[in-house]
Length: 118
Image (tube, rainbow, N blue to C red; front, side, top):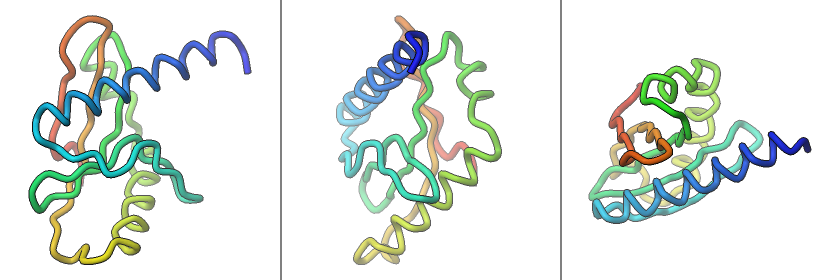
């Protein structure tokens, strides 16, 4: 792995940690971090009330750059992994489901985009 890739990986992990703390301060319960399946990976899975939230975290300089970094192919992989998670979760039929994006910048507060795609 190159130095630049390692640096980007570390920045992404830090962004995920910041996003998790941000969500916990907003009364979300973090269920999973870096949930990996053969179908795809989900950065964070959280619950708030009766909603299970699948969260993609992006570390970018601007909100627009973070939003554009989530491609249609990536949303399909996240949806596939989320479907698998819900299928394996007991009582999942009693929960609503949502897909969020959190964009973390260098200094600003996280941007939390709820229900970013369906």
